[in-house]
Image 1: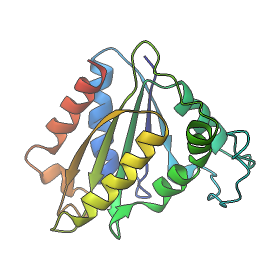
Image 2: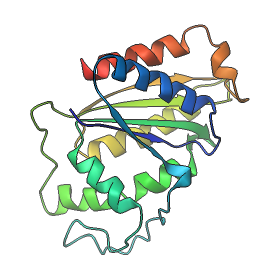
Image 3: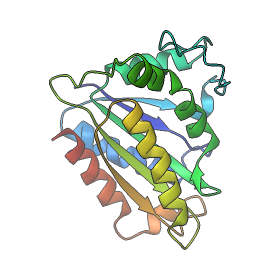
Length: 189
């Protein structure tokens, strides 16, 4: 089973990455490995809305998104971990998601969705945010749902934690690390 994860936080060892690491620990303790992409360190140009992928399903720009696209295409499980900024996923996460327009073109214009493989395709979204209300979670989750649907992941779950603002706040949450670990185990079971 091929599992990939996207760490969308610009903050090294921040709350989102801490949650992601717990989910990965659950996956690895279940006998699988995870390839992690740290989006803040990658060279991914924003989608230009040029329509260049409409006829081929391939992006005309060549950068680190090439390896991301290849990994998405061949994965059975996909994890996205992102802080919530201004009611959405981080800019790093959103750039990667927007560049998945080529998958949208391939699936909806060219009628060639990614096949499910013998394990099927599932996803997990991990969100942290400093706000007290759920609006940011709902908006970020909508973005994640569109991403997962576009890359032919029909089923995903989301863990979200609010009032997690400062680095290390997630460690003070009574269940977050356990929840993320168990979500990782469940993702591969």
